[in-house]
Amino acid sequence: MKTYNYEDFSTGDSYESGPYAVSEAEIIEFAEKYDPQPFHTDPKAAEDTVFKGLAASGWHTAAMSMNLLVRALPPVEGGGMIGKEILNMKWQRPVRPGDVLHYKCEITEMRSSKSKPEIGIIRGHSTTYNQNGETVQTLEVIMMAPRRNKD
Image: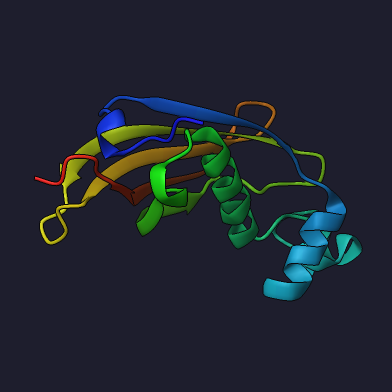
């Protein structure tokens, strides 16, 4: 299988992935372990909260988006890209049981690492959508990818 390096990507490239179906059980399981607030763990109690029903934790949404990012990108040499930084993460609307998520990332900037010539830095704008095309999360991601040309 062909693996990709920094040089195989270009500013303006776009990658999409999905679908990812979200279940009530998954929302509750994640929240009980990592974000145990009633609007994430108890469908009945969630009805009386700002969400007016069960909603996935934002951190769960971020984790599902990461899953979709990995599936969207072509296989990268060395096992994958390494996350360096997340900027401007925003959750625009809650993810609900039964939602089906889709993901899109567009490369907005590329540069060589100043301190490590074997690494290239890739910046992308990422958006996660639900089945209605509504944005549920946006963020800027900065990733590191191995370079073929190290100069």
